[in-house]
Amino acid sequence: MEQVTNIAPTEIEALKHEIERLENIVAYYKQQEESAWRNWTTLRQIADYAPALIYILQGNYFVYVNSTFEDVTGYTLDECLNTEFWNFIHSDYRDITRSRNLDRLAGKHVPPYETKILTKNGTFYWGYLSSDLIYLDGQPAAIGIIQDISERKKAEDALLASETKFAKTFAASPNIMIISTFDGMFVDVNERFILETGYNRAEVIGKNVEEINLWVNPEDRRMMQKLILMNGSVRNLEVRIRTKLGQERIVLLSSEAIELDGQHCMINIMNDITEHKRMSNQIARLDQLNLIGEIAASIGHEMRNPMTSVRGFLQMFMSEKVLIPYHDYFGLMIEELDRANQIISEFLSLAKNKTITLETRNLKKIIEALSPLIAVDAIKQDKHLVLDLEDIPDLLLDEKEIRQLILNLVRNGLEAMPAGKTITIKTYAEENSVFLEVADEGSGIDPDIMDKIDTPFFTTKEQGTGLGLPVCHSIAIRHKATIEVKTGSKGTSFIVCFKV
Image (cartoon, rainbow, N blue to C red; front, side, top):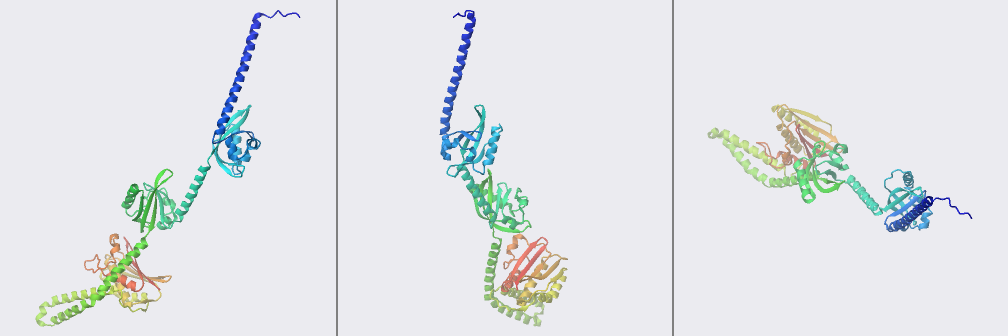
């Protein structure tokens, strides 16, 4: 065979270099392939030990799941690789998971989200799924990590259930409940607050307690804040609050420091004891009246006997001509004895066991019979009398005592008013009750003495005995009636309620 001798030595050398370069390229890619396989093997070993579920999804099927995925779901590797991904997702979350997986494969950003993973035995596993886009053999795939959040979800459900129970208890509590910040801004109030104060939620939520003037004495609120800062809580602090209409209520306040959405707050529980206090005061007043009545019954007659004798001798002395220069003194002494006798008579009216005669009488007619006498008293003081008397049912009354009750209330009202003002006497009926109302146009009763006006011998008048209103209450008690007092800057009303 003829040898080829026309190839230049330089060309042969270049060909050797090219062959060597190609061999080096093949060796490099082979090394890279071996390195990638080693890295993949290492990554699989790491992934198998990971506590989270790790998978690679291409299309609708898995191409890889770690051993944790198998352990949690209960499926073998072969079962996982031959089952569509959606079969592992709870039906409630299947559509959203499919949609987000398609978005991920399309290159869109998909933030982590919660989902439910079904297990082979039918239970579910709460997971927090995050995924990313990768390429396998030039095709897009999704690699995902699912972290176990079952315990967190249980805690959240328990917290939600607890919050639901608290919300129901808060809303339905028979006590006033307020959640506020430490600086006094209302966060929430319950239905009882709305019912008792007259405010609606829109009027208080987000407002400061000072804006709605809730506290009668702001110092009570400052004391409550100090106690909470010192002790973390307050128990049964007696305070006064004001309703939307300006009425004062007495409440027992208990407060607790709480944290709400990261903010330090207080939950305030108020137990309205206004009626309880009123009843307690009435019982205490009745006890005082009964005690004084017993004293009156014991010594009243004994005091009257010597006074009657003294008055008789004074009258006898006035008939003596030699004592005519002393008539003025004797007259003054008799007037004072008569005044003392009148006080004793009122004193005896306080007696609990005083005998009364109840007969069928009409309150309207009793007032009409008294009206000329009352009108004369009013005219003498340059004041006016108005009668607003509706027809009312008859009652069982002791007429003498009821006349005394009416006169005491009217005279108190006249004395409380300046000249030119009007006193009004009303009668009306509602359901099974008959009402007598005596209303004046004075300046009202000072709140500081409001609780004392029924106390025997307490008076603000120079010549008063302090027995007028206590006697009225004694008469009301013997007639099984009640007396309510309403007072303000435009006057005072005494309302006597008789049961039919």
